Length: 137
Length: 137
Length: 137
Image (cartoon, rainbow over all chains, first blue to last red; front, top):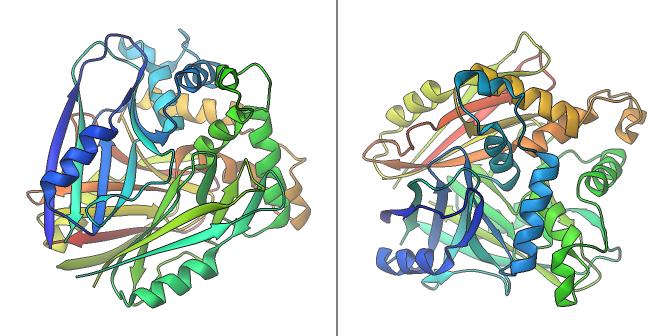
């Protein structure tokens, strides 16, 4: 049995941004040497996400607009009594999800035709981390 | 250590449909021979879901009605400028989730009394795939 | 390869409650003896969640208020024709998620600075279970 751990670092230019990280995860899986197993990819922060969807720029805009509608930036969250201003980012990340688990088959991500992995940042412009953990043989 | 990979195929009759796949996953786990481990079950498409909830027909209708309310089918998504018409299906699938990871204990799905696995289709009437990956011993 | 299975039991005082279970999961990981691997933590019920976010009391109130807005308790769900009254709890749990998968590195949860694991109860005041499954070496 093999395990492999890696960390990716992101500092987005925008407060909210969706970044395609599929290539970075493919490279980590190659480095792991695992041919059959699972890879966990998760945000290590609670105001950003890792999720799987389609690489299409209009859809990314739709996601951000939709998130603003169902989890709006507002002043009156209780969390803001601590001095924070990012409660909406905690909610947005909850909708999009913290993590994905992807199968590794024959040494590669076992993906459907349109699956791509994204880092979703909702409180950006500062350094954040994503964890990659591979387990298998 | 053992790993096992299988693919399930679905062509739903309805555009939006919730299909109980618990039995298919139980059979795949048996075929894997794994007694202790994990099984990942994920949609390989970005407009459908795999999730766990209750087998109750009214609740399935509630889910579909609720999803239409918070992620409605509309014409004005940016994604539709590509010619696609299914942006809402990408959002609905995000709410319901891409994947589940289930424990295998003593050779069976380690489930609570009401847990059942469902395939949630939001852009159906065409052939789609679900991945089953088992890892353990 | 090692695997380890444990069950946690909760009977919340409130119908809706968010309980920090990070310490319990850390203890289970220690008992497992696994140094490198994955831990799955999932609710075994379909009206409660396991999720990762921030330990901050105001934010927990924000979560519960927000869930009530997007998945409100109402009388007219189809699920209630069975005699049940908790359809909203099924929806709330869907938003918050059934499970988390966390990396174990050097014998500990491989967490970012603010990550904490919570049990989210949406139909409480009765005994419920959470599953902890560890796999690794």
